[in-house]
Length: 232
Image (tube, rainbow, N blue to C red; front, side):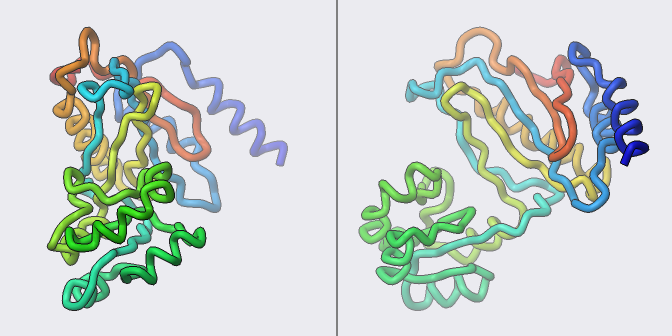
């Protein structure tokens, strides 16, 4: 155990809290912190120059990561008839209507994504106070209210993620597993940061991307140099 502690201390001493690392440098350093018994997640935090309390300064969207997320996403779908069958065939973990609503009202909310067909929103609307606080309320702007539930389920299961600025204007998102190749993780990082920069709201004034940091589940947070990112 002492050897592990010494090794970790030696790696920690390499971290410069003030340095702006390139993505490649940061990833290489985080790989040295790799835990032996778990496939850690690589996570990005973006501090934005916005105030999400204002309607014209909100940043939120869906993104299909080019290399996938590596996460097992649990999906619930509100649909009837043929659409329900398609959602089930596409791999949805739970499909239903009023029965699914009642199940969620009882506290069964272990889902990462909730999708609904437009005709089911009368039922889903009763779950606003349940799904809203968890960020699970289906939304047509995010593609989670759609007649094509089959594709929506496949997208969710295939590595599509939602990014959303929290109250302090910070976006937190996992972009893959540390078992991914360097290039796969870099592709995902560039896809996320590019999407967020492109989504700059009209109400954002001054510097938009204030700080970007990269970390792994067991690793330190490292500041990333975004000076070359267009619009940052």
